[in-house]
Length: 236
Image (tube, rainbow, N blue to C red; front, side, top):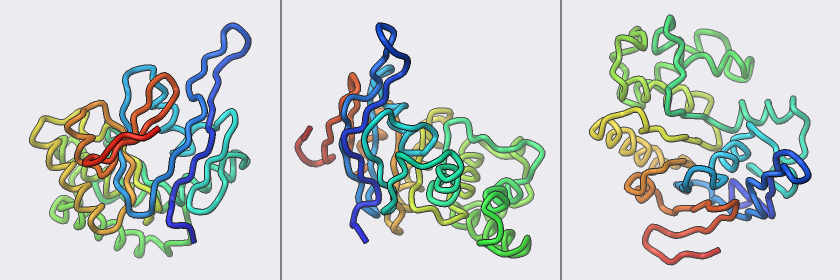
């Protein structure tokens, strides 16, 4: 098995055609090792969001190769990509995306409904969801609905939901964007703890202070990428 969880080679993404064509990505190549914590940064319109969507199997490249956990996903059918996305990637979004009528426990159980039999029946799903919520410090909030939780607690529920299927990759898109400084710091501390426990994390952010919490920063600008160790030198 490769030491890299993500291997991207000469990735391009073009929207439209002819004179109206927009080149969002122009030959991006990068790798993310298993167990690494990487941040992706870039200004608006840089291609950062396009790269994130491709890494998350939410969009497809125009050309190039994307290998995730040893499988080339760049040319898979929509159904196969959906399967990879559900099994391999846990998503954390800025807006939490919790169902308001569901308790924290029920929200965390949802991904297992999509994956199905791999995680047993409802009793096993509940056990795993409880364990995930306890892992993010919310073992005493299992029955609370989102409107009974603070923003930081809601994001913790979202992280538990992302982790419950034990994905290969945790993809966090601006996870502190809706939080105050203290709550945001707590979420980053939680991500660092998860990384210390072996999780592979790709964090998308526009905040330099947040990006520096990762091991390595990938900067996207004008469709090109460069990478910099948070204590090292920049490389193209």
